[in-house]
Each structure stands twice: as structure tokens, then as C-alpha cells.
Amino acid sequence: MFHLFAKLGSYNIVIIVLLCLNSRLQKFHRDLPPTPVFAYGASRRGATVPGPTIEALQGIDTYVTWKNFLPSKHILPWDPTIPTAIPATKTGIPTVVHLHGGMHEPANDGNANSWFTAGFKEKGPDWSKRTYHYNNNQQPGSLWYHDHAMGLTRVNLLAGLIGAYVIRHPEVEGPLELPHGEEFDRPLIVFDRSFRKDGSIYMNSTGNNPSIHPQWQPEYFGDLIIVNGKAWPKMTVRRRKYRLRIINASNARFFRLFFTNGLEFIHVASDSTYLVEPVVTNETLLAPSEIADVVVDFSKSKTDEAVLANDAPYPYPSGDPVNELNGRVMKFTIKKEREVDTWRVPDKLIQYPSPDLSSATKTRYIAMYEYTSDTDEPTHLYINGKPYEAPATETPKAGTSEIWNVINLTEDNHPMHIHLAVFTVLDQTELVKAEEFKACMSKMNDAIKCQISKHARGKKLRVAAHEKGWKNVYKMTPGYVTRILVRFSYIHSNTSYSFDPTGMPGYVYHCHVSNYIAFPFMFGGYIFKYKT
Ligand code: C2O
Image (cartoon, rainbow, N blue to C red; front, side):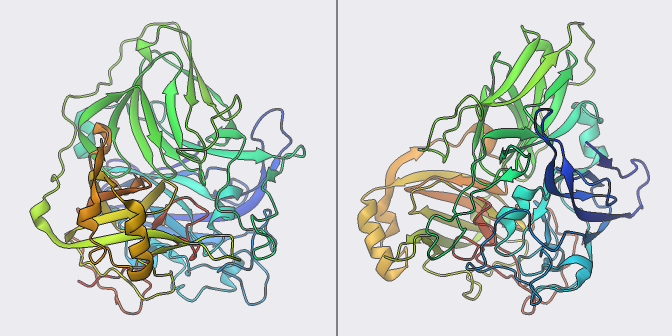
């Protein structure tokens, strides 16, 4: 993968990048004809899926001018009958870029209505600037950038608008001596796609209920697993430790990853921060947009080959079992020679402030609830009975913490992502007499009046040790209340906010099944605004 590097060692550089969004052809597999894709690149010709990995330094500004060179017509079917960014002239493909995991002012956050078409000819109602400013004033870690345009996110992601972004902090991370450098520290961007015989990406062009919404489907599942732009790639590795930042960039597929030869994952970080101590597991479950930042020690391998495999049913948790095609992810060929490994995994990583319940200034109840009308098949998913268009429901203050009780009354596991925040998962408790509670909620839409405390009494799910740190997305189990401690703009106190909270669109939280991102029927985004 191509990297855009900040030069380590010079501490007052500003990185200026111009990234083009382009349409081009890409070979996903030697047996597949070239595939038309949408791609990010530092030049129009150099665009790739995924886009270049942007490397940033903690506290050093990065400016990116995202330019749109997409063609006038989409390469995938989309649906104009759902709330969607549609240019007035009906030409050009709207796009906007969100840096997922970034802590930045709303004008740089890639709001769904800040879209623009080629040449900035047309712009969404919340568009405000061409060049995004990322101050990178946050903890080091793995982020990713992706399209976030209203109603088009699912197709723009499927077409290829995805890339990794790493924030490094050499003084803090250097002493850890974790695998480092381009050879030993790699993002693995994993997603599923289906292809037609001619190489083009296959997406069903008929919706679940075409008489109402001709194309819309709530989920996309592809047959093949793609890693860093190749189907089932092979990677030759030395008998040493590698750091793999595994990003699930699928629209809807969960991955439960494991090595067929028993190699272990040594988790060092989550999608937001380092863990206090490394955690060793044999498998790891990633919902869309979750990141496993792991060290794999290939010197421990008893075989010369290791397949990274997946056994998560789709949809997760109660869908079809994986098959031969989507059950394998990639193959590692491990060189025979023994080597001296200079990388290590220290016993202690980085200690961030642990969650402090007493610091929470507010407790909120966030009920995800489905409304099925007799005629309209795509079930409306609302939060506390409110659609996306409703005024902001949450108004936390910068730098404060809150307890959110996320009550999932739907049938599906929803990976909930919050912009401009990190959170820790406190517990997950099953709802007892859930039907009674649901019936009450459908009338009152008020968890307290519906006596949530009487219902949140069932069995508890264990939060895995490697998921106990700070995260920005987590799996909201259906039928459970997930209690999280949310911290807004964590490790950001040396930045002052000077934006106008009334004029701007604020931030969103949403389910990261990409068909739902920026799709207001669903958890398209329940905007919260906050004031300083
Ligand atoms: Cu990864 Cu609102 O996004």
C-alpha cells in the first residue's frame, strides 16, 4: 500500500495533501477482469482501493483538500426515493469525507450534508470548506477515512472510497518497541464484495420492496473477502512479530477472525486507544468499522502457512454460516529461517485515564426501535421515536462524560459509532419481559416512564478483556441494554473550540452498517450538538 508520510523528527511541519477521488479500474484477483471502482489517490492516476494510508503525527496539523473527479454517473445502483444527496442539476456524484475516529471541528468532520460534486460545482446545505484541517490533537492510533454522503454512503463505500489513517506519537510509542516501520506495521483493510463475470462489482439493483424503494436494501453481503484491495491475498512474512491494524470496512459483514494454525492475536489497542496491557486471544469479532490492532508473532508458527479465516454468520449473529468463499480472508506464508526479533510486546502499554463513573454529568437512555408500517417494507429505525430530521436530541458539553444506556429493541446487532467521542463499555444486560417494555416504548418513547430499571435485570454478557478500553464503536446486542461511559472530545483539552454550535450541523452517532450511515430512516444520525 502507498503511504503519505509525515517526516518523523521535524516537529513543526504542516502536512498538506491533495486527495483526488477518481474512477478507475482495479484488479482484485488474477482471475477477475479489471473492476471499475471509485478510489482515493494523491494523483488522479495513482488512485487505489483502499486509498493511500495517511500517516500523521500527534499534534501536527494535516490539511487535506479532497477533490472530486468522480464521473457524472454512479457505477452502482442507488435509490433516489430515500433521503439522498441529489444535486439540483442531477449530474455528478455527491461525496464527502469523514475521518472516522478523528476529533475535529464539525466543519472538518464530513457531515452527511456537507457533500460536493466534481469541481465543487454543487454543494450540500452544510458544506462550508474545500480544505479539511485535522489537528491530530488526540491519542495515537488507527483511524480510517470514508465517504459519508447522505443516502449514498453504502454505494460510495462499496465502490471503493475507503482508506486508512494512522496517528503516531513517537515519544510515547517509541519506547514500547512494538513492531514498527512499513514492513512490520501494516493496516489490513478487510471487506466483502461480489463481482460479475466482467469484473464489475455486483450489487442487487432491485430493492427489498421495489414498489416503494426501487433499489434500497438494508444490508450488503459479498461473496469474496478482499484485503488491501486483493481477493484472498497471500503475504510472505518473516519469523518475527508483525503489527496488523485490522479494519473491518464491510458494509454489513461481521468478521470473527482466527488463524487456522492456532496463531494468536496479541491485542495492543482498540479502535481508539492503546490498552493498558496486551490481551491474548485466539479469535476476534469485528463489527463493521471496528478495528483490531494486534501483534501476531509468526515465530510461534508450527507450520509454514497460516490462513486467516472467518466464521461469523451473516447477518450477525443469526444469519447464514460462512461458506468456502467468504470463510477465508488471506494466507500468510512464513519463511523458514529463524530470526532475531528486536520487536517486543511490553507487559504495560499506555495507561489512559480509566473510566470514572462519578465524573458523568448526565445519564441518557437511547432506545433503538423499529417501526414497521403495513406498506413500507424498509422498517424505520428511530432513536427514542425520533427521525434524523428531528432537532438535535443530545447536547453534551465538550470534555464532559455521560452514561448512555443504549437499548436495542431490534432483531439485529448494531455497531454503534459516536463521532467526536470515545467510550468504554460498562456492561450489557438482557431485558426481561422485553415485549412489555417494547409495547410501552411504542406508545410513550420514554425509557424511564416505561420502567427500564425493572426490565434491565436479565443475564449479563461478558465484555471481552480486549474490548474494555476506550473505543468509538461497539456491538449493541439485540434485546440488551448496553451501558457505556461516553467521554466527549477525550484528550483534547488543549484545543479550544470556537465554532458556532447553532449554525453547524454538529455531530452524529449512528449504526455503522453502512447502508444505515447517512440514511435518515435508520440510525442515520441523531445529531447532537454541544456547546463549550
Ligand atoms: Cu465511520 Cu459516521 O462514520
